[in-house]
Picture 1 (cartoon, rainbow, N blue to C red):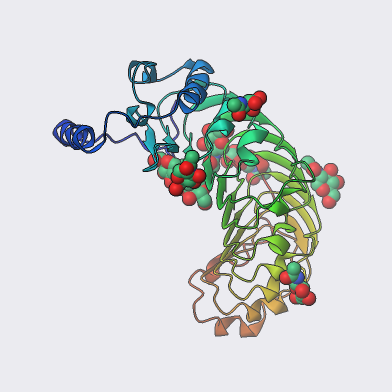
Picture 2 (picture 1 turned 90 degrees about the vertical axis):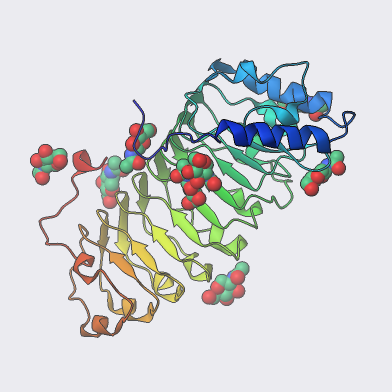
Length: 317
Ligand SMILES: *[C@@H]1O[C@H](CO)[C@@H](O)[C@H](O)[C@H]1NC(C)=O
Ligand SMILES: *[C@@H]1O[C@H](CO)[C@@H](O)[C@H](O)[C@H]1NC(C)=O
Ligand SMILES: *[C@@H]1O[C@H](CO)[C@@H](O)[C@H](O)[C@H]1NC(C)=O
Ligand SMILES: *[C@@H]1O[C@H](CO)[C@@H](O)[C@H](O)[C@H]1NC(C)=O
Ligand SMILES: *[C@@H]1O[C@H](CO)[C@@H](O)[C@H](O)[C@H]1NC(C)=O
Ligand SMILES: *[C@@H]1O[C@H](CO)[C@@H](O)[C@H](O)[C@H]1NC(C)=O
Ligand SMILES: *[C@@H]1O[C@H](CO)[C@@H](O)[C@H](O)[C@H]1NC(C)=O
Ligand SMILES: *[C@@H]1O[C@H](CO)[C@@H](O)[C@H](O)[C@H]1NC(C)=O
């Protein structure tokens, strides 16, 4: 059954595709095709699929892999994009993808992939966008070897899988991270706020529907570009740290259905808030009178839901 979150794959109309192919063939000298090594890495990926969604028809050994479905190459004919979202693919993700030295974007979202997320992809020295959301991937996210230099990943989406375990503590090497979406898995341990210390451009941190627990650790205060912090439906406890109120860039703060407690007075400092949801916590204090000063707040009704809206995990989808 396909989730409504996953769009159906849209195809170019055939005449356009035909034209594009003619242009491609006439512009590219026949000698420049992808290297045998790039081709073999992609064929390893294909070999790991038990259901390839029809890819094998186009991924043929005797053709230039830059012309294969879902593949885009840079001008120097190294594979830059592997875009295979919503193709009904089953099987595992090959670690050999890590051998594509010019790979910038990998999107395998909305398939039925299982097994783990290979370390080679997370530690890649080229990948900037990694989206494996809406699959059935299991296991933990890999820690990186301590000697790993700064990595270029900007967008990581591992949401809606079956990942477990603590969030890796070694991901500080992702100094370019802008968005991390790990929603709807079974991650445990503390919220990975440590990432704020290393990635100055961090903008989106989406961690809701997991099993994160304990206090919200220090670190958020250093996320000076953060616009969205979402960690509802976890098992967070303790007070909302002052750190949160330092993130004046925040536009969306959503922490419902945890066990957070304490006063909310600091909220007034978040001048750019557009939406706020803290319902279903133990936050006992009154909403500060001054909340009305948050001019941009559109969803004040969401602030604190009635006390009886306790956590009900069975209604969390
Ligand atoms: C390709 O990747 C595999 C698995 O990560 C690795 O063992 C192998 O050395 C790589 N091959 C080349 C030519 O880089
Ligand atoms: C090819 O171009 C890409 C993107 O510009 C670059 O990352 C990669 O290093 C280049 N590879 C080679 C072999 O020149
Ligand atoms: C991956 O592809 C899906 C389907 O086209 C798209 O909705 C999603 O935004 C893509 N992910 C990224 C990070 O661009
Ligand atoms: C995954 O999350 C990223 C970052 O929030 C987003 O850009 C992308 O569209 C998401 N992918 C899907 C399939 O929703
Ligand atoms: C959560 O992930 C499962 C797959 O693991 C998916 O079927 C479901 O739609 C996701 N729920 C939400 C709210 O994204
Ligand atoms: C984090 O923030 C604190 C105080 O807000 C500051 O002293 C420290 O230098 C910051 N650290 C980094 C790595 O930006
Ligand atoms: C949630 O946290 C409480 C303490 O705050 C603990 O007793 C409980 O075992 C935790 N539950 C899960 C599922 O982690
Ligand atoms: C919890 O949610 C489920 C599903 O929405 C609902 O059937 C059930 O009545 C709820 N339980 C409580 C105690 O609210």
